[in-house]
Length: 131
Ligand code: CO
Image 1 (cartoon, protein in one colour):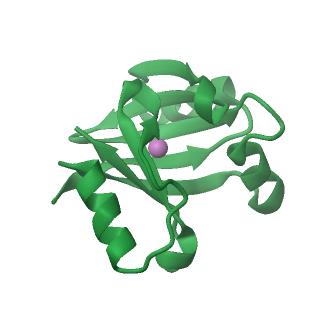
Image 2: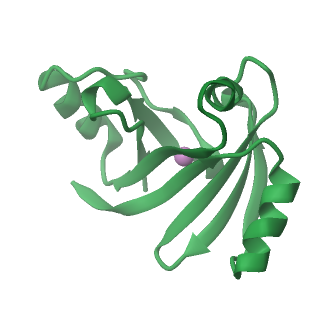
């Protein structure tokens, strides 16, 4: 059901500054886009089959803005690449796990994504990404 770690999401307060820092480390910035639905600006930095996702809030009520306010910049979520997101969600629901999204929504790259509540994953916000 799970194919790989799709990406690790990192909350940053300034995307341009963060991209410059990561470039200095040797990362390559592949895509930068705004995901309006999630009120974030996103930069994808490929690492082999996986990616680092840098996230900057575009609004004060964005989940990323709230996260930084509470905990500061840092790892925000881990995303797992799944074959069938509906199936993964149904399975989690059947197991009685707490979901943030009962149904997939549109995430970065126009992909179907859904989040599992950290309460059901020992404190780690988990994202399912299809495809
Ligand atoms: Co993500």
